[in-house]
Image 1 (cartoon, rainbow, N blue to C red):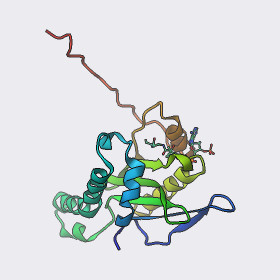
Image 2: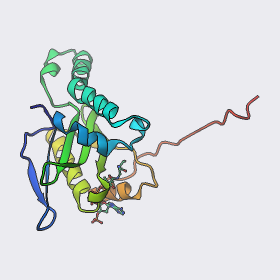
Image 3: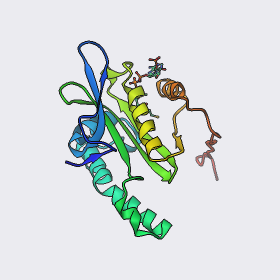
Image 4: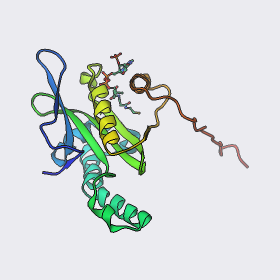
Length: 188
Ligand SMILES: CC(C)(COP(=O)(O)OP(=O)(O)OC[C@H]1O[C@@H](n2cnc3c(N)ncnc32)[C@H](O)[C@@H]1OP(=O)(O)O)[C@@H](O)C(=O)NCCC(=O)NCCS
């Protein structure tokens, strides 16, 4: 079965407490219905129903990698990039005991050694148990193993949970982009 990420299941087991176990492993296409539910509140999916979010994710994971690989072949002038998964979109999921996906993290390289963290989310009832942190650690180790040198991400400053998570891992604020806007309503 297809999985997105460096390793096949069963993945690592993370013991949260004596009754509950969480497993982090590469995303399988069969996880997409659950992942769509976890990501439904992200801006890019707002207004879409779950089945359409699932379809979008399916296209991204099933076929997106070929677009990226072909891009790299053209950029580097070498067909070898068609046959390497080094720079593929990468996703890991956190599963609880009954294989229910409760968290997801997705990243991809923007340049060969600079990766962008695209999405991370944990189901509300499973937050504050260390799952987001473990997903991040897994991703960082994966990117390091792919010889990535930097991870970048965008976060709203008022998203305190996310900002604190990233700071705990060692992220610092890079050169901040400035949001500029022009209100056209009063323009004559
Ligand atoms: C951000 C998010 C993924 C964190 O996941 P999580 O599993 O709850 O995080 P963890 O339990 O691993 O927490 C790790 C650290 O993050 C910080 N943190 C997480 N949630 C926090 C909260 N609500 N308030 C303050 N700090 C928080 C803490 O420093 C925590 O370490 P600590 O427990 O030692 O204090 C989760 O809140 C989420 O899914 N949010 C909605 C989606 C989102 O905003 N994604 C980020 C987009 S940029």
